Amino acid sequence: MTDSEGHKVVVCDNGTGFVKCGFAGANFPAHIFPAMVGRPILRAKSKEGGTMLKDVIVGQQAADLRHSLDIQYPMENGIIRNWDDMELLWDHTFGEDCLNIDTAMSKILLTEAPMNPKKNRERLVETMFEKYGFQ
Image 1 (cartoon, rainbow, N blue to C red):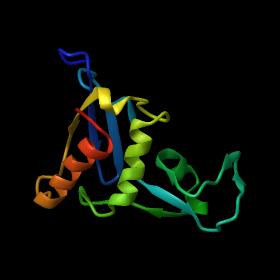
Image 2 (tube, helix red, strand yellow):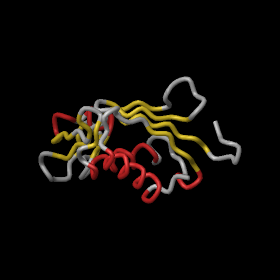
Image 3 (cartoon, one colour):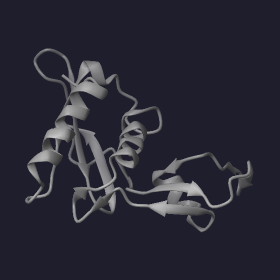
Image 4 (cartoon, rainbow, N blue to C red):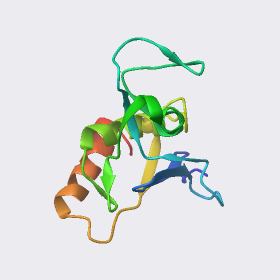
């Protein structure tokens, strides 16, 4: 769905366990993937089950290779605790692997925990507008 100006409206639910994302007007999320970031335990270039182990692996790939990775969860009880890792998840969400959108030509609707601290909310909005360039 697009707004009156033709901008896509992205809906993103950043959960502690899963990220659910898609577009406004859809009945279901376009993508659901684990909200996890993994880094290889051994820092050598290697392949694991046909997948090249990179410096950082996120989402479903991280879940599939969890036995070879040090897994981190950027959210705790619905509140972002590790902003760098959360940005890696958003890069994955908005990039080619998931939504594949031009964030500068899109709007975003985010969910948040009921008791999300004001500083977290401010940083979240700042990141979406300044780093990703949402409308």
